[in-house]
Length: 158
Image (cartoon, rainbow, N blue to C red; front, side):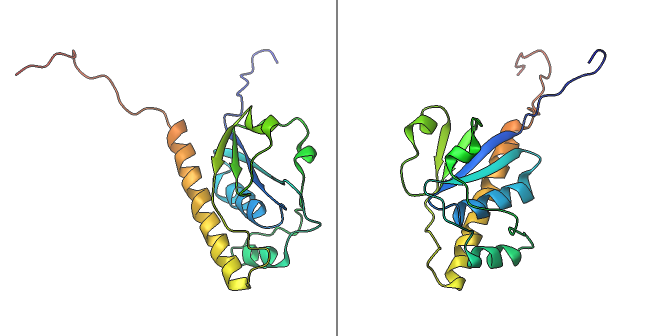
């Protein structure tokens, strides 16, 4: 509209990808939304989505006060034509070529906790939380304006 300034959303669009979208990518998306909504827009999907989010994932995230009950496993096709600035691959498999050819891929080696005991599930949750926090810090540093200012004439006087 006339007289109004329109600001484009400068947040990075990040897709967290795993096999079933029932554990790892759901946890990563939830941590990213909880801790990094100022710097990124998070989504998740699975290469072969499960029927539901794993009960241990719901419980483990609940311990962090993050409620995933309204989430569900999604396939890449559910994302339509969404474009992403970054795909974080937690699957241990190759990212589909059509996606890999048009976006940056970050590989995270994280075991799939779907059939692990609950304590191990929580260890994976904590590993993912640390990885997501590191990503958020990196994105914040990349988007921060330079704090260096030109000073003086540029001549060195001895």
